Length: 185
Image (cartoon, rainbow, N blue to C red; front, side, top):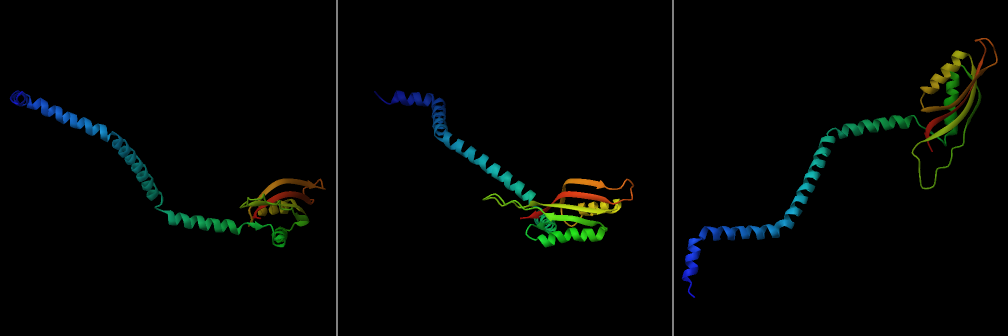
């Protein structure tokens, strides 16, 4: 068999044969590159997500030094208003100063025992409990309570009992308080 009929067939159908070869080449390329395409798409998605995260970090960190300075200053103010459970005399002196400033008379004052922290956990802040009783005129008693509320230390009133021995408004008023001052163990 000679090659002449084959050559004539190729010359007659050159466009169809060339298109078929090109389509077959693309088919092989797509078949072998499908896995690489999936990996490349995943990589692009991962890089886009990382880029968005970095862009958000840059945007949010614009005023970071100023925010850190403000938080540090606020933390220093809070730390200055905390009491320490181990400084009993200094803590009680706070109440004695309130007594002197408001003209009330402290009848009883003591710091409650601080519970031991749980093993392995160190609480940052605790409430240090106090029980106190004081006596004075109605205005002085309220003044003491206001100063305690807006004083140098953070306080939380647990319970209060107010009584008087007199039927008139001018008689002495006795107040018993259970409260906590925010502090460090």
